[in-house]
Structures are given as structure tokens and as C-alpha cells.
Image (tube, rainbow, N blue to C red; front, side):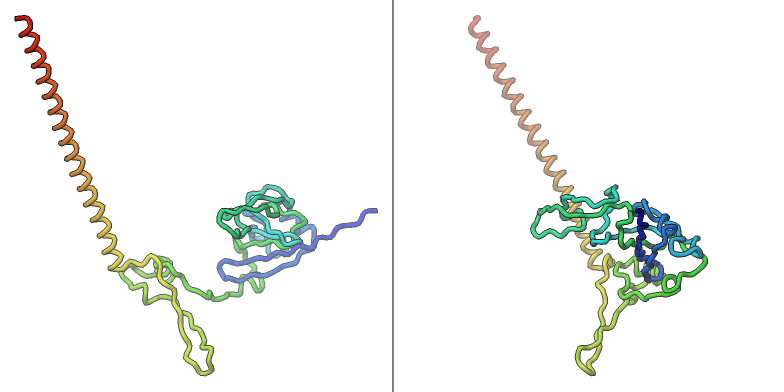
Length: 250
């Protein structure tokens, strides 16, 4: 007898613009055909969650199978494999420096064994997706790098970036206590101290180059002097030898 196999797959779709994400459960094979045999970083039609979202485009970013083993980019098989992983492989946390261990991971090709598939919205459509594209979640933390802060607030180089750092309030643990605020340390901030250190490094490099040139000139002069002395000693030796020969002939 033939028993039909019904597969239920979950799709965790995230919107990078709003910061929201939503989980969809799909059990229709006609919709699942859009994503089966696709690889990580491939794009999928939005009809997978409904015909009204055909103008959407989703991008596969990862997933996990029914036993919880994650998908790994670069493994071009739809099955689970055991790989020797190290610190830079991802998906493995080593206990000692240089340690490697064999771990089970899922290939990057989507199959029916995948339980959850993670995707992001690559191209938006006309119809909004409920609780995903029309729901905006505020960012918990603001930008940390100086150029990113300038980009967020549309600042010029003459503006002081330190006045525009996004601070977040932390409520006090005591009742009636004063709340505290935290701000990130600005990275790549150009300050007078940093410019002074840069000028100092440049001057040290210039001094080192001048010192190297002086040392090379002194060495070349010493080498020329020694070659001159060696040549003079050789000429004097030849002259003495010729003089002795002439004396013997007489």
C-alpha cells in the first residue's frame, strides 16, 4: 500500500527594515516545491506563504532539521554529514586552543528533512504581510561607529558625534531609585589625541628613515675607505715585489 507523506515545514521570515520576524507553518506540497532543492543564499518566490504575496522575494539564510542539526553553507548535499570542525569552521566551540572535533551538520540544500527554514525579505511586494512588514520594532542599541552615527543623523564632519550617541535608560533595582543611562564607546572617533598620536607615528617613521639613510651612507663610506686601503696595500705589495725582482737581476 502507498501512504502519502505529509511534510510540515516552518519558515521563520525576518524583515531587515522593520526588525520584525514571523513564523509560518506550511504543509502544502504545491507551496513547498518553491523551496525544495534550493540552497542557502538562493532566492525563493513569496507565493510559498500565499498567492497574494507572489511579488515578494525571500532569501534563504539557513535552517535546522528535525533533530536540531543546523544547515551549513558550502556542504552541497541535502543529507546530514559528519565534519571535522575547528574554531573557524562555525557551529563548534572548542574547549582548548587548536582543538578539532567531528560534528554532525546538515547540508546547505533544503530537503523534506528540514524542520525550520530561515529566510529574509530580499524584495518587497505591494501587499503588506501582517505582523511582519507593517510592524516596526525599535532598535535596542544605536550605532557605535562614528561614521554610522553620522549616517543615521545625516551629520557633517564638522558636527560633534559625541552629542548624538543613542543612550538607553536602565531602571534602578531599588524602589524609587534614580534610573541610569548607558552609552556605547564611539569607535573610530577622530580626536586631537588621536591626531597627535598619528603625527608622532609619522615623525618616528621619518626619523627612522633618515637614520637608516645616514647609517647606509656611513657604511658605504667605510666600505669605500676599506676598499681603497686594500687597493693601496695591494699596489704597494706589487711595487715591493717588482723592486726585489729588479734588484736580483742586477
